[in-house]
Length: 357
Ligand SMILES: Cc1cc2nc3c(=O)[nH]c(=O)nc-3n(C[C@H](O)[C@H](O)[C@H](O)COP(=O)(O)OP(=O)(O)OC[C@H]3O[C@@H](n4cnc5c(N)ncnc54)[C@H](O)[C@@H]3O)c2cc1C
Image 1 (cartoon, rainbow, N blue to C red):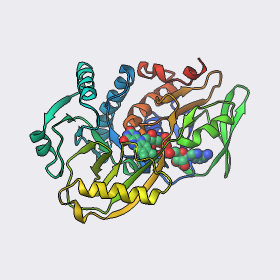
Image 2: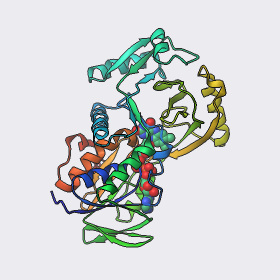
Image 3: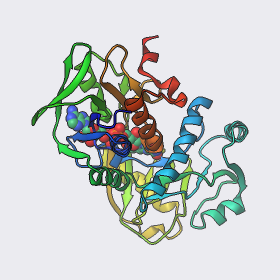
Image 4: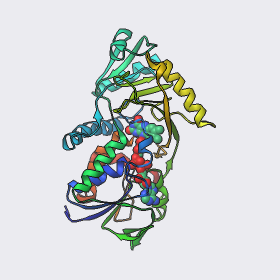
């Protein structure tokens, strides 16, 4: 490893923060450049469910499972990280889909159980309506996204990383290498530049002739004012996904990515909040504090883009949905690949080259 490699990480969301933290820990000299506050843009708007749940092929399940394990490792390295393995209870699909999900994921080793109505009531005693049965995964959890991101950045800073508030306007290219960035505060050079800029990534990459096929679907999440404890973990009911945050807010979307805001986001938020209140015993007194409207940085096939652009040295790209789940594994694997050239086999399907085919 080149211990003194200088790396610029563009982005101070959960992905940039995790990559910067892992690079710093491995001995690199890291500068994070971002035009948001530490915490990012999509990251503060996230539901922040950490899972290896349904609907994914096995290789992606394996990456997500590994990321869950890496969250535990990260929390050991950074005591106080706001991580909770609170469990996820779900019944937002048909009975046959639930059967297929439990059969497949059990065979892959996911700790998923079928629970009856009485058990659901014991897990979440404040639900007003109980399903006949649900699926429960005790090993799912949440990380409070902004606090976790800031903890990573603060610790990286404490170990020598620099944080610069600036907009990257261009990549600097020398021959077939990226050798720095141009910013609203001037030129900065580096051995490696990492684009971890969420929905801002395609514009930056385009500057070096690299196309990132990203969609940005919106998601609306309502946040109550902090309230006494009503929920123990994640509840993924039909059209209502909710959890209670570390500071006591109940947050909800109409799915984990948040509701589509429709034409009138305020009205959508009020309607969703009314459903949330009705779904919880003791929920009548909940007050809507605010809603967020986030845009998910989602590669068009739904899977992460993590790796180098073909034929271009000095540039590394990390853009994805499910960034809360994936951040610790992406940070670890990216730092190893950037510093040592070792690409983790779990990343094999997620290079940019797949879109060229
Ligand atoms: C509604 C919603 C619900 C979600 N739910 C979940 C979930 O339950 N579980 C899960 O795992 N994931 C979830 N996600 C996805 C997850 O939140 C994102 O994948 C993750 O936050 C992306 O983090 P990021 O660091 O890549 O991007 P961001 O947090 O958007 O950070 C991007 C950073 O890049 C900077 N930047 C951009 N352009 C420039 C530029 N030109 N110059 C300088 N800086 C720049 C920004 O300022 C910012 O600091 C959800 C997302 C949304 C929106």
